[in-house]
Amino acid sequence: MTLATTPASDVAHEAARRRTFAIISHPDAGKTTLTEKFLLYAGAVAEAGAVKARAGRRSATSDWMAMEQQRGISITSTALQFSYRDCVVNLLDTPGHRDFSEDTYRVLAAADAAVMVLDAAKGIEAQTLKLFEVCRARQLPVLTFINKYDRPGRDALELLDELEKQLDLRPTPVTWPVGIAGDFRGVIDRRTGEFVKFTRTARGATAAEEQRLDATRAAAEEGDAWTHAVEECELLDAVGGSVDVESFLAAETSPLFVGSALTNFGVRHLLDAIVDLAPAPTARVAASGETRAVDAAFSGFVFKIQANMDPAHRDHVAFVRVCSGHFERGMTVTRADTGKAFSTKYAASMFGSDRDTIDDAYPGDVIGLVNASDLRIGSSLYESEPVAFPPIATLAPELFARARAKDTGRYKQFQRGLAQMEQEGVVHVLRDPHGDPTPVLAAVGQMQFEVFAHRLEHEFGAAVELSPTPHTVARRTDAETAAQFPHIGGLLVLLQRDGTLLALFESQWLLQRLEGQHPDWVLDPILIDAAEPPQ
Ligand code: G4P
Image (cartoon, rainbow, N blue to C red; front, side, top):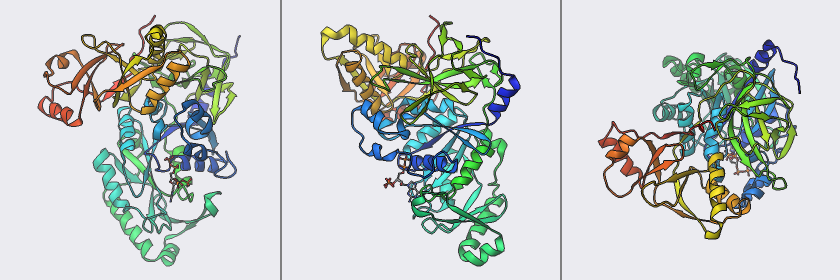
């Protein structure tokens, strides 16, 4: 099929109006609610609640396939695309709760920015911290949204302090709350000094009414709450807490917004900031160190593989982030790791459980390639000019289990499933070349094991017995360090197929003690999914 080439200037224009980001948060901080409200403000849904996200989520069962079908947007979507102002916004899903898995980390490799949602009463929580570390490893610019300010919570200045101390990230508030958490009247827009007064709408189903008042009127209407907010803003001015685009893009500062997704307060400010501040896709650095300009020929990489999304058609969908060029369905691209041609006849965009065929995509967009069973996480695809993007970084796994075939007669099927799912990045498969040959599976979320076991049984016909090991934390290490490990209990060194050595520790305490005693040892929490060697 011959396709007309799209002028580079058109591609550059389309890229410039893309914003591709992910939300990082701890379960219950309000990610789903905020997602719904983004769609509401973008006009993609007429009324919040129209997106059937939460109802299904409540009935989470261990049946992963059924779960996938029930849950609607919050789980299956991978990428939601909507237009806002003159931009095309791609919101990438970061699965949480029981669905937390390495995919959650990998999604961040496909994003150009992140929105960190904090519950005003809780501040930084465990999962947010982990996801933030991955953002930091990728130098991803982060916008912060302090959510649930409509109900009692912590003091906003105290939350700022926590961000700075715990994350070493300097928050630069764009809006500042008038009224304390639980008595939230609106915000000062620090760019103009105006008071933006919010009015609740019934159940937050429609956009919140915003009234802009100048300082005099605000002082007259809000009294002490206004004076207090103004004083706090003066303090912020004095400590240099104002938005600075350069340091934001360098992931050193974080423009901060205060709001309430439930009542729609502050949602518009945040969405505007995504358009105004978050970066458009730019030239991407390849593994070689060269950069691929957005208007070069098509290129992209696989950041997620989902198998059996549709049980009726045992299919695999490889989600590809477009890095450069104009993607047109039907084009034949080349896989960087094998040099083989790949047809993109079956390309889809995902919205909820519906699958629409996608015909065009530009840098920043996500395409789902159906029946892409031999693509792997990190595989790069390109048209005409070769490029291979670097492997994807995730955090080291925290859950480990030995895997044995229940029925030794099904050993071959067991091995085939193991190899296939290792390739897809469902779990890490670790082996002890000198000790127990039973493979150890490693994951960051329990669901990775459940998916593994389910697929092994139903797709490959080999039931598996998983026995958890006592380890709770792992670090990437090297042979030199491993050779120095003391022969003490609670520590196990295993090998991944790509040659990565992982040290498994039974306790965080043991790891910290060894780190303290041997600061020169290589004990890296960041894991790189090594690219497959060319076949
Ligand atoms: P998540 O995706 O991050 O896990 O969080 P989600 O949006 O599902 O929100 C978790 C709970 O917090 C929900 O309540 C939701 O309504 C509530 N919530 C989200 N944003 C706000 C906010 O700005 N203010 C207040 N007060 N609550 C908020 P729920 O009772 O668990 O569910 P539901 O009955 O409301 O559906």
